Amino acid sequence: MPQQVLCPRCSRPCQVSDRPSQGDARLLRLAKNAHEGLCANCAVTSFILVTETLAYAVELHGPAKVLLMPEAQAGFAELFKVGNADADISEINWQVVVDNWELPFPAQSKSKKRSRK
Image (cartoon, rainbow, N blue to C red; front, side, top):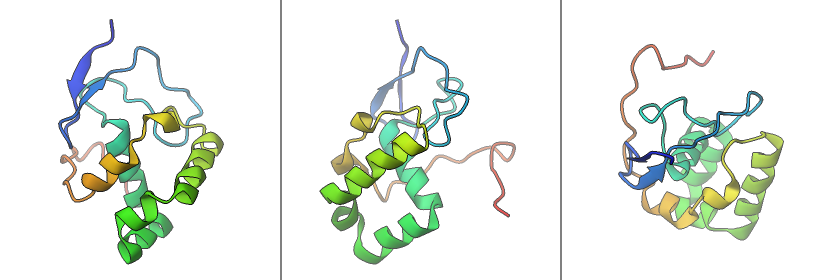
């Protein structure tokens, strides 16, 4: 039976996957263990924030106006397919993403932080 944990960012219960990450997933990869990941909603928020063009659009217009648009959600569904995401678009609750937009992210250890060059 899969383990249930609380997301370290939003504290929502989430289920640890019992399947390994796809080796070719380019976004929203499954965590290697229950202590390293975020729920799908917080993971998509993180993805948006580190993707400059997406972050800029949300900053400019606000998360509700951008993320609750059916066209934007359809675009994310395509992005999930193209990026071979481990998460399924149906796992994302866009209203929860908007509601939790301002929550801080848990600190990462220095060894886990990636530098962008």
